[in-house]
Image 1 (tube, one colour):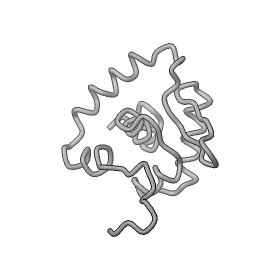
Image 2 (tube, helix red, strand yellow; image 1 turned 180 degrees about the horizontal axis):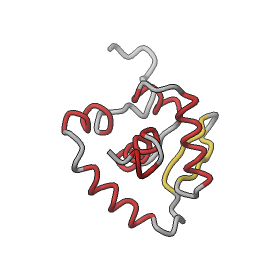
Image 3 (spheres, one colour; image 1 turned 45 degrees about the horizontal axis):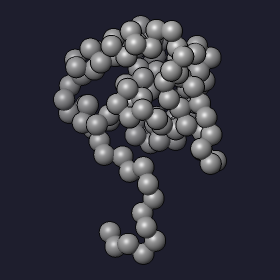
Image 4 (cartoon, helix red, strand yellow; image 1 turned 180 degrees about the vertical axis):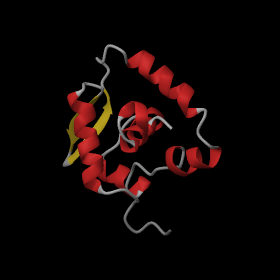
Length: 111
């Protein structure tokens, strides 16, 4: 939908994902959207160079989130929220609103 505006569809997917999930890491995006990790890493690098997102280490994992110091963050999130409403409902549920487990399962806990 916005790939012409942002340059490619991977950036669009990353921005929508960050809008709904706040933080993420490259391999999570790669597995959710079933796209090559290298494409995700290049898009994340491009967004970080532009100052739109920031990265930080949490343990051995590099996490990404919106840059709170980005001067147009409020306008960007409003634009993304409005655009998000035009996505098909099944697409939103499948990729952006699915329950993502953030904590590891306790050892020995039955499935």
